[in-house]
Image (cartoon, rainbow, N blue to C red; front, side):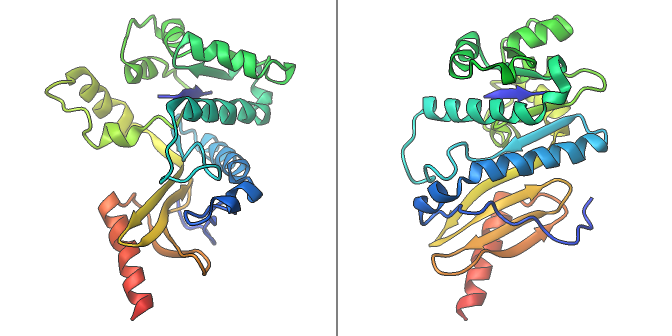
Amino acid sequence: MRLLLFASGCAALTPLPRGINQYEVSAGLRANPLSTVRSTALAALAAARRQNLTLLEIEFPPLLGVRTEFEDVDNVQILDANRDWAVEACASLSDLGSELWLAFPDRKELELAREAWPGTMYAAATLTTLEDAATALSGADAVVQPLNLEACEADGSALVCLNGAFDKLRGGYYPRIFFPKLADCIDRFVSRFETIFYLKPLSDKGRSGWLFRVYPEPWQVVAQSRDSSDVVVLASETRPSYFEAIEALLSAGSSSSS
């Protein structure tokens, strides 16, 4: 888990960030889609806060526009990209001052963040580790990061998980028989999160697209091709499963080719 930051009936759906294309990385380099992701996600966060939602998830490819899902990347690149995105987001949340906590998974990551971002713009926020935040808020002595995250839940405070890989947790990646405490945490805590921004690439049988959601809008499956504009092939009030999203993507391809 990387770090922690402190419906429907819409007239139009938010389009995909400009420049993202699984066929052409250079389009992302020109358009800087992560900047659009940040502004869109922060607008979704503001909308969720107005509705008094407190457990919020933001998930997207941290190297969007720089690398595609087909390229090799190392964990350090991912961690650094998440850190930079979150710290830059803090500038737009500066009105919260020290009430905004930016919690990193460990002390080394916290030190690296302070080295990479030494300016005063971010000094007002409280930079800490996930473990220390959990201890400060609840006195918890947990060693599993989702349990530490749960210990950070406080009445009336918004808890935002950035690129926390919740899909793995929800999808049964960690079997209950081997991880009973984690499984219980998923049932009582992770399952309650509202996804306020989500962007995940989809690819199957030569078709590519994205599973996309911006709170409070419906979920979208957006098909992409090399030579045409993005097409919404599914809009759903509930989150489609991965297989439902792929089916919509492939069905749209079959319809367009017939």
